[in-house]
Image (cartoon, rainbow, N blue to C red):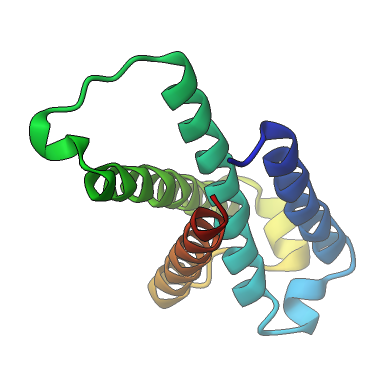
Length: 143
């Protein structure tokens, strides 16, 4: 199972690249740079979700009903939790971008908007989800 230290390292790496991209205007210089950032953001959040799932399962007794006690049902519940957690963070990030554009007007005037419209938001959320599913499937196969 993923440890919190590894998940935080992945999240820190994604945030570090994000800060560098902001400082160097990387998002505007490389038009496609946002796509791998959202993919790896979803991937890192899924690692955090996996660590959280492992902690919950080892510290909290959850009684499953008969149908949910099969290994496949537990796997499905884990996948829903991990991918859902990453998607929730992705939605929160999109809200952050939207609110930032609304209230940080001097920054937006200097560097441009973070939120390019609904198609960009949907693409970002799709990339977050694909990254999360990839991480869950990869690390689940290692367990």
